[in-house]
Image (cartoon, rainbow, N blue to C red; front, side, top):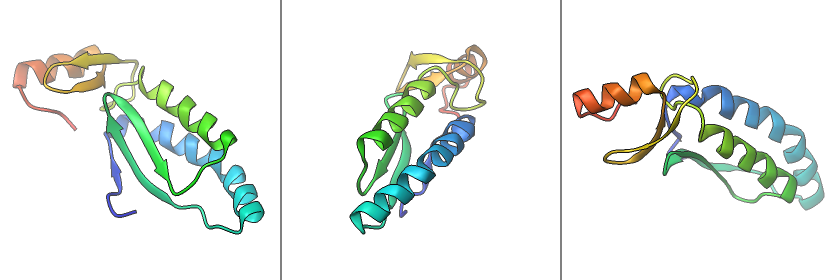
Length: 109
C-alpha cells in the first residue's frame, strides 16, 4: 500500500473492526475468484473514511460503507463522538478538537 493510512488516530478502532470484518469475506472472495485481495489506500476524504481495494464484493462494500458512516460521527483525532465541520476542509471532529483547530488555525492530525 504505497500511501499507507492517511487519517487520524481517532479512526483506528473503526479501521481495525473493518479489517476484522473483511477478513472472512476476503478469504471467501480470494478462493472464489483466484485473485489476491489488496488494500490500495485508506484515508480521510470530505470528513469520512475512504477504504480502497483492488476489488470488492457486495458484502465487502456494505461493511466498508458501514465503517464510512461510523467515521462521519467519530472524531478523527480522538475517537470521541464528533460531527462534520467545515472550515478550510471538511473534517469530522469533536467539539474540543474543532475548537483547537479554530483557535490555532492549524489542521490537527
